Length: 114
Length: 113
Image (cartoon, rainbow over all chains, first blue to last red; front, side, top):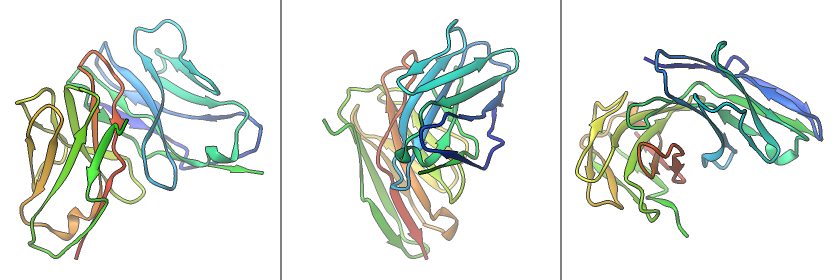
């Protein structure tokens, strides 16, 4: 069974600074994907970025980048130049080979201060 | 461009009542999923449908049934609601097993008294 661990229940960052949200996973699958979703206080789940286990380069999407270290089984999200609108809960679900089912961790609440 | 839609947005039930949560997607996706999210926690998979005509259990299927009505629609039924089923329910869809990203609906908040 897969397991996702997000060790930071809450993180605080100053506006315009960069922040790293940690995510580690445990799996015996050889092929899998790691995702990051943002859940603002309004409740919707917003897809941010995806990293496949065989992707050689770290994924980037605008201000979001994924620091993927396969040997350490970590897939940390880096948000550059934080904005007030980045304040939200962040999840890094694991997607294995079994019909795309996602396994979620507890999430990290990010608060951006002005 | 609606994406994934869910109805209702909010529902209050009494213990023992039944209801069906509706989900529809207009992206021609093959796979659809139902998750629940309890306060302060991540989402847990209830049921999924890898393709039209198939359904299978996820991590927490007890107390629920599903129907993949057609390619667009995937409903979740609570036959006899219990307070433990108070949660936010999310429907999601994705293209195929080889296209990874799941797109989520806005969620249904369910309160069982």
